[in-house]
Image 1: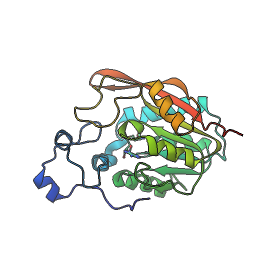
Image 2: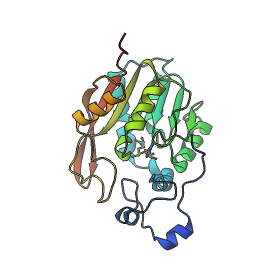
Image 3: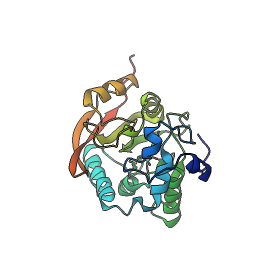
Length: 248
Ligand SMILES: C[S@@+](CC[C@H](N)C(=O)[O-])C[C@H]1O[C@@H](n2cnc3c(N)ncnc32)[C@H](O)[C@@H]1O
């Protein structure tokens, strides 16, 4: 796991490359158009750092988490001993919804600003007893913990190379455990601004193939609401899957 040092851009960096305000997908237009690698080694978590303190003020984000939790609960049996890992948890909005229905919770998040909010919620009781990890499986080895349920809400489309991340999920899941991905259906690229180097949503077949490479059975896909942006609706899916049984 990486250290929990801040990923904020320094004032020196800003002088060389003046950064305008973050865009809605969490990167800086100047940095993206000129392909500047952020000082944190490539992750655009610096803008998530800056957006973390006001993330929960947006009612659409709270509503998205509420709807995702409702769909997830309808799709997966949750128990008081279910060990939950939320990956790319942001401020933990989804876990806040799921906590009354599960056991021990862990929230993994590489943005230090987001982790500050998570730690504040642990302290004030909204996420009491939860473990907060600085974890990015595209750069870090999976920790030793094991989880019955891994959830990721609007995270995977931000990660260019999903191979190590999905392999990490396979390692972190218990036998019979469940992975739930809530993310954008394939879109025309208009969701993010030009230069975004993540995924323009996911074609279901493509994601199914990537999951299979990591050892997962074909997911069950279902609609999971929409995100309204730029005056239009973008569809979300919930994909639920388990690890395929190893051949005997
Ligand atoms: C669009 S936000 C979603 C946050 C939260 N899941 C929610 O729905 O409110 C994407 C989150 O993914 C995190 N993220 C970006 N790249 C990541 C990576 N490689 N591994 C884990 N998390 C990542 C960001 O720091 C950010 O908190």
